[in-house]
Amino acid sequence: MMKILLVEDEGLVALYLKKILVEHGFNDVLVARNGEEAISKVDESSPDLLLMDIRLGKGINGIEAVKQINSNKKIPVIYITASTDEHTHKEALDTNPLAILSKPIEPDELKDMIDDYFDGYKIN
Image (cartoon, rainbow, N blue to C red):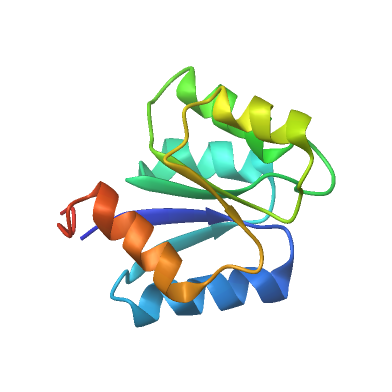
């Protein structure tokens, strides 16, 4: 089964995204509220995929968290963001994400993105 780490600082958005993932068959979903917690959870749980908000309120942002995670482990990432800032998108692209999805997230688009990358195969 694929393990997904969802990193989102807004509680309602995190619950919504987790619900979408579970409804689409991704049952092993961990949630982190900030970049530092994401780094810690990656070390503890070795997820197969990061679903990372770019702007995370206090502390490091999602892009910086991914850079730190990638210095130790290479984990595929899909960024989610409400930002349309070109500089932020370029900085995110420099980390080689699978995709950058704009909020609000379309449930089928998210599922298809994950399925396309993993060829519909749920990682054990």
